[in-house]
Image (tube, rainbow, N blue to C red):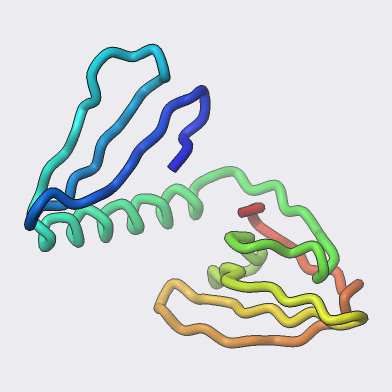
Length: 123
């Protein structure tokens, strides 16, 4: 996963452990690593998801409007409930968008390709 300025995080396994390795920049010496059991890795992932959701709720949002055909994975729809684009399929004059909610539900909606969709955040 690229973090910008050459920084990267990789996740892998080492036996029964999950290993998260951070490389701050290509010129950095050594690689800090976090090693944990699978259960702890799930707890970390859940904590990261909660923190990301909190940050999205508190970040100053400058809504943007795009046509349905321009949606991309990770876009978050403007509104009182968080809906994130999971998949987009363009088919001529229509666009099928699969949305995912924070509660884990997903559904597919079909739009005219030029329908204006308000976004809270680009993915």
